[in-house]
Length: 287
Image (cartoon, rainbow, N blue to C red; front, side):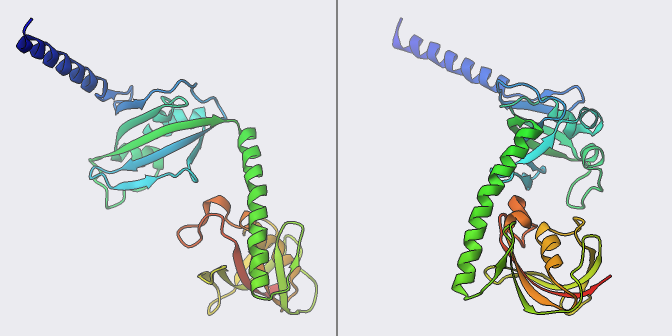
């Protein structure tokens, strides 16, 4: 066999390997008619009813503009609900295909996706006749008990960090604050009169909320006070606890650990994850 023949055989082999690779990368069609392909095949099981799947997820429009992307700190958590997964539109049906360890690409037409899975109006920025490409990886599957235990453990560690941050802030600014068992720190600057509110009371509160760096994220000052039923979960836990420490007419400052505020997820772009919050508050009225 001469060198030319050997080169020809090698070329044929290389072309064959490339063709096989391309074939393995081709999109298939699901039972519901949507194009998909596996980027990685895992060795885990499909989720069972009630289990929570931790997904790494990103989806893009036809121009490859990212519409959503989860992070390692904030993965997409989806509980397996057979009724929803069977009747919740194409995205939930796609979840049914994904085992623990799988990564999948799936292209879903925009109109049935928005109408069936998101139950919303199609944004003007999206082409109703187009499609959305999802990159979904199931990194782990956990029971509700496992998720709760992990969340509690993270919360306990985060509370320690939050208290250290608050105590350092108070020391740096020569602030003498009182504390509660939950980790809340508070200062009463102006004493009010009358009785403290009780859970279930209707209260009116003026407030200004800031991060510890001084950035204001919300305030009622200059407008009407916020009217809520206190102690019933209408506000963050730090408020439900802190407002009960005030009397009508009193003014104070609440230093709220992140675990008693917006926690790991934060709130929009104004409050980053795991942020300690400072609220200057005035209890205007109790009914």
